[in-house]
Length: 396
Ligand SMILES: C[S@@+](CC[C@H](N)C(=O)[O-])C[C@H]1O[C@@H](n2cnc3c(N)ncnc32)[C@H](O)[C@@H]1O
Image (cartoon, rainbow, N blue to C red; front, side, top):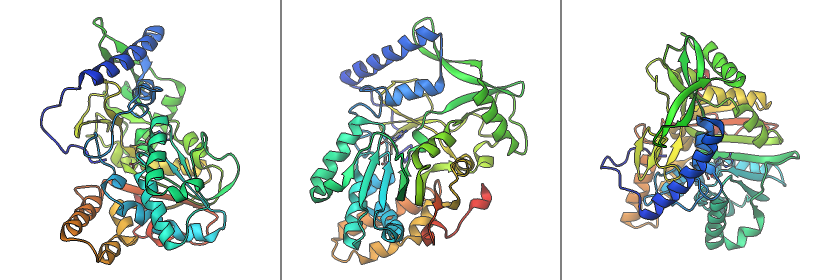
């Protein structure tokens, strides 16, 4: 996701968009009235995933220039082709290898990766897309039907992660940043949970409530890795449910890789004293801002990933960590520059476009360093080198 591409004033939502947001707002208000307040994570869950109304569940464009943000697979095919090439040895190693993509977005990654494997002669036996959004599943199906109709029969959209042992690769780009986070604020050395309540005029407002045992334990655990305790008034986010989520999506992987790409930091950088208002960020028509309570259903809400927490969640699911590096280091090791050099029959404009894509994917000020790639491996003889070269796991 590339934030802050446009600094001009917010475009006002259309009348239809306002009506949509008002409907979702009414749904959230009902729930708040029942309970007095709801934890922020529940507000985020409804704002993003309320059936038929949430940002990811309804029909908003979301991805690309006409949407709210751009992800690596939306920039062009290079990102997906590099991932496909890096995973090829693992797919070749077993006759029944599957590739599971979590959070398939517009389907752009699936189209480019499958086309690459077809060319390399190592298509996975099955390509499965696990996506929480029914609307996006339809969009993915339409994209694949239009671009690769002859491969449709090997693609499916299961409702749940595999419940029996399987082999292959699980891959998720920018999914963990979209999981609903618990927001907390430190008061007298203990976390209080940020909730959403209603002001007298019906506006959503943030209030502080007693934290439950899970949040208290999660904040205590993360503080053990910090040099100093979090200061009074420090606000941030945490994902206490991450170990269970990771176990649910890839706990049954018998042999293969689980690869996660996202923006984020190792824990000590995530909870830096000066990052005292957390990492939560909203995207609306390529503007980035911090007001998550505005226009529910019309904007993306996301937060950075604590990669130390992700590494620990892998350990919890008995998945050995195989590599942690920047997106730039991974793409260069996976041969992104070779792919550009091999593209001989392109017009000058297409070459320029490809060069721009490489820059956006790899430059430090773009996605190159902000995005990291974490790879877990179980039961594989040799983890492909792009996942392990320039390993930075000592920073975790
Ligand atoms: C920011 S988008 C990224 C999409 C795509 N991977 C890309 O890079 O363009 C997040 C995606 O994750 C999906 N998603 C969010 N939470 C999920 C969950 N718990 N399980 C499966 N998919 C989820 C969303 O519906 C959406 O497709």
